[in-house]
Image (cartoon, rainbow, N blue to C red; front, side):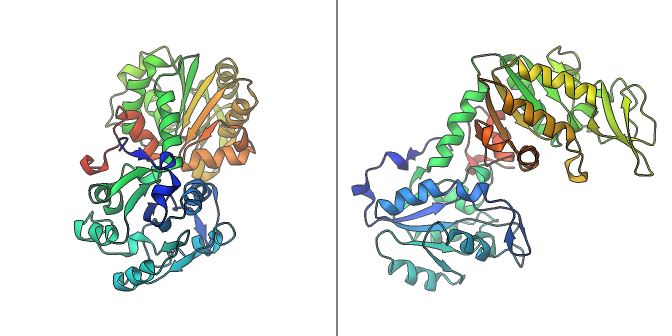
Length: 378
């Protein structure tokens, strides 16, 4: 998708009076109709305010969750009210939506209901895309987190309207392009799951990086080729041979394991029992990882080192704190669980760049800058 003109470079005179369809990044965790994390939503503000101050008419669109009952954009609208005056158009009837957008005045902002409530968004339906396009003069894409998705608002709208990239999208591209070829001593931190995607990225990026610190399924799978990892989660479908032989890959030397009684222990990697599973890297490994981080100038992180969902975040929190306290380090992180660990460490403001995308970040890094959802079959 990196072929758009930048909206920020368009003069206000050219935008004045134009209806702008803005695909924002609005998907965020919500519990009991309350927003848990506002980071991603706030990343939309710069583009929205630029358009509004340029006297454009802004039609903000986005999705929330899977589009199930209860995934209304109402909590998003309530949050936005404190920052951006707007009208929330709750109806799914396009005639009504069209009527309301035609009555907009310069600088007005309206928010449409969850795109996944509409028939055609998830199906990548051209008729639905044409309905969206009929609302506006130009289209601005600022939802990096879904740039790898084949949805109508992502993959089809650029073929129907004059299209521009938003401010946050450009920041994402700029930072991740730097990460593809760092100029100083650099390290990767890879954990979590989704091994197949991460293997592609490691294969591509390792020649440009000095080391990679691994945890999660990545580490489990590599360790399983030499040690008994008990009931630990591994991915046998992926060939990790090149990682086993690569001296840049730093594996755990001790781990936290969990047994059937829900008891956890610290063990050396050659002492794991059949009924145990790895849930985090151990203290010796954390110390080794932190020592590597302290002597580098660039860090790229995706995926927690431990089993985040079960609360095993000690290693990830420690690593986050080390990165934030290291002088003159350029730090980039992405992925929901990774960002949650960084927030738990209290250091998120100290990171150089936090990506709004997890899967999109991985897709971008693995595919030579190709962000073309219309041609993506995933």
